[in-house]
Image 1 (cartoon, rainbow, N blue to C red):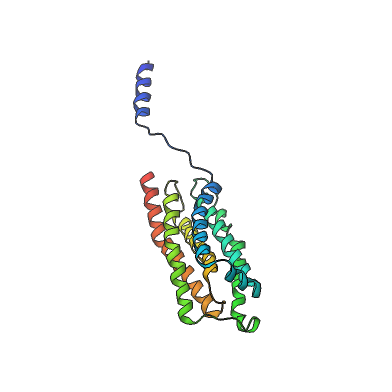
Image 2 (spheres, rainbow, N blue to C red):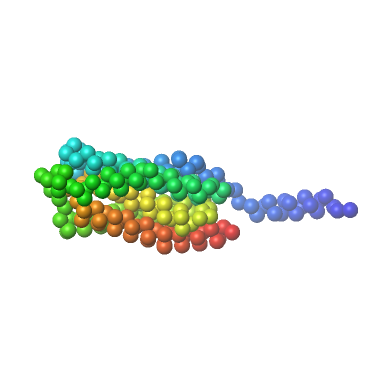
Length: 222
């Protein structure tokens, strides 16, 4: 007959080595925390450049405002989806959450290819100015991505590469929306191609590096 006291001692010994785990906050609340950092950056840029130039551009070409709105909503949806996927048991369908705002962002931005006919009096970006947009989007996306990766590493994303892709999309979209504050010229095909290049670079870097970091964390947790 087994000794119940031996079982009790075994359970006590195993329990003594367990460390308490703090429960993660809901994905929407963690998303708000990351967005607070994005909002703080926006406040700094608005203090530096003001809102009047941005609002004037949007009044002259409303599609630019819709593109900025689409970028902002894409950042929110992609970050939320990344936090949701980091919770084991969540469905992969969360990855489709940013699709609708991303289509708004892409569709409204696509009108910039017709900018010389739609608003011929506006200043169209030169190749050098468009290149500055690439550095802006990538430059702001890197710290925002690093912050998201750090927050996600507290969870256990079972799909690390997909989660990292969403991190890149969220960071690039947030940076593109921040760019609207100091984007001193109208959008044209060259500018839009540069934006697309910057977003692609950010997503690819996150898929490669961010996915590796999240994968390593999952292996250690296992």
